[in-house]
Length: 552
Ligand code: F6P
Image (cartoon, rainbow, N blue to C red; front, side, top):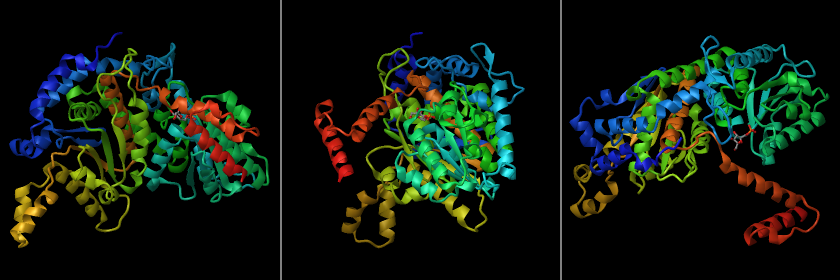
């Protein structure tokens, strides 16, 4: 089906016209004019609250954005996704991470005529049984000792999700178990983890959808060699399990397919933490907590599917992002979780959002006519405040921020939670209000500064404000709330992809580098001299220098 260029749609044109007026607004005035702005511009779903009132929008902006979502067919595409249609058409695949968290008794998606629920729940039962055996100490290492360390070997979606979730949910961790993540092909990564674990009590999970990813397979082979060398056993079966869609490669690696946890090609790597890729989570926090994590995501799925667009949290979050990106021209989105255990959430979102929507070709095969995905980056508050917030407050770019605050901490140290939240709320207030020249002047006068010095300082101490942010509130960092939050961002990404008219579910852009790396690896390892003419002068010189260093 032909989708018109985004810039040709009536709704986009109406928004462009509206922007000519909106660009003159200051949020201070919007708040002053509309005392119930928070009431009108917040939404609750699945236990979360999204406050989007500190954006440069009014109710007209919101309704024009809603028209855009309707004109771009967001609802039809959403239903097609949930129903199992092959919306990832460049790979001929359905997109059904939502089916991974649907209860068994809910009539669910069908792929190629087959309902997927029974397969999904069979694997969940396997995860439950296995995680209970490891946690209870029934599953033991070759010498009879209990498992103490779980090493997940995987990269991209086979790493970022489990690492982020295991870190976020550490309040629920089994006291005997520690999780480690090896992702980088850089041997320092594997070496560091292996130096901390004992072969007798370590369980390796080789996690790879394809089971062919260079980094993961090299790390897995090296871990296997280490185990065979340092362990006093060749009982790989007790120490290596796999999570994959590729049973043949798993068997070829030497892992008993009894100890393989399958998933399916309709689960994208960056959407796979809900599948067996979440095995480290189930092992660490227990199956019931893993189930609560799935239930939180399912609650957000239901909300996304059923709530009218006007009160639909992922839709609103996506549309505000479209406004900031396509009309206010922001180049990036900063993620600021005010919770130490959410420290990997920004990097998780980098893959989710940028691998999904970092595209310039529409579903029709023509170039887009607007900007698409902004760069996603960030760090935990309050650390970011003392590093890059200066640029966010007074730099030349307008960078919207997603503040994420958790109302109930998992620690009991007095005074810290209030200080943390005070900083979070103060930042969003400062970005919105700013501090104008009159306010700065009054402050400096109160300090008794002479007029000449005061005049020189005013421009430096002035904050223009009017910088957009959202604040997302979680009641606590529970499995349910975390599941709901991740699903929120997944659906936000989906809605933005639908509006831009791109396929959010393939990732051809990572292929070229992979192919070239294979050629260069061969050249770095070759005995004979390398033919310089195969590459440009820079690449040839770099290869030659690396070969010289290796031979020195
Ligand atoms: O980076 C590309 C990619 O295909 C990601 O989409 C994926 O999450 C990652 O590589 C790892 O892939 P696999 O799970 O197949 O090893």
